[in-house]
Length: 212
Ligand code: AP5
Ligand code: MG
Image (cartoon, rainbow, N blue to C red):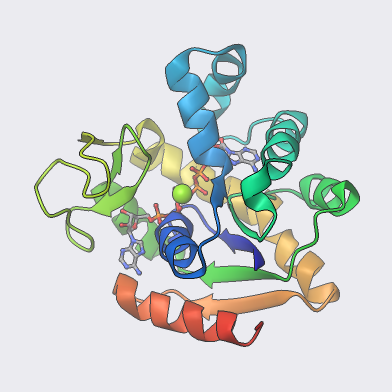
């Protein structure tokens, strides 16, 4: 399966991607997680991206297109992949088409902005592997510790309310037009994000069944 996950910041792309990855045994490629890892390691790309991420702006297209091109060429992507957070602009979608990596569908998880703001304030992420938790909706087994790798759970810097507002603005302006882009080629699937993670997952998996 070759899948794109679309949706506003905090719509649950990362959360659903983890589940689909396990179910279908295909890797998730999250540009956000890759950029945050680069930032942590202090690499040149990470330093370049920092000011954009911290402000809730998009990192320049050529940087993320380069990341994706390299990552998709790795052997574990042969059987399929989930793109979480890429493409995010029309030029990124066009670049993906031109790279020759096919996709089966773009699945958009729809969540209202008011709900997003609530969700972001409770999000915690693993500083080691990037897995996502929530203080109310998705608690880890042991408080402050990642279930998957034992890493420490921290608050993302761009989850501050003012930054979230800008991320939502950027989403509506630059990323939401991708729904029309994929609708036009018959590849758009839509799911209404639910209050419970498991309820969203049920809807997502039902949609993916239609692809097999
Ligand atoms: P990125 O890391 O991709 O952030 P984002 O799209 O803003 O999305 P999030 O990761 O915040 O949300 P999500 O949809 O994955 O939600 P999650 O599952 O965590 O990108 C960060 C930055 O990197 C960007 O701002 C940009 O600067 C840069 N960047 C990345 N890709 C780029 C690109 N292609 N081009 C340019 N720049 C790029 O869920 C959120 C919370 O809600 C969690 O706590 C979760 O537990 C909880 N939750 C999930 N589902 C539910 C549910 N159903 N009910 C209740 N709570 C739920
Ligand atoms: Mg994410």
